[in-house]
Length: 110
Image: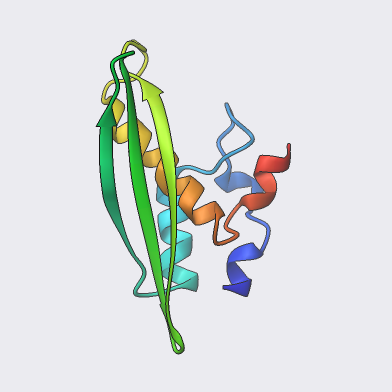
C-alpha cells in the first residue's frame, strides 16, 4: 500500500485535467503495485434530475487480508460531450476509490 502513495509520472496525468489520472493508468498501476486487486460496481443510481451516480469498490489483497475502498462518481446524462454516462461515472468512481488507497491522492489537493 505504501507504494501506491508514490508520485505518478506527469506523462500519466491527463493534459486537459491536471487533477486526475486516466482510469487505464490507475488500472495498470494497481496491477503493478497490488497484483490480484479487483474492482466491482456496487450500485448505479439514476436520479430524477438526470444525473447518474456509480458506486465502485476496489479490493486489494495482501498477506494480512483484504482492504476495500469505495467511492462514487456522478455525471449528468444531459451532458452531450459524454457518450456513455454510466461508463464516465464508473471511471470517476474507480479513480476516486484508488485515491482512497493513496494512488494519485495528492492530485486532489490542487
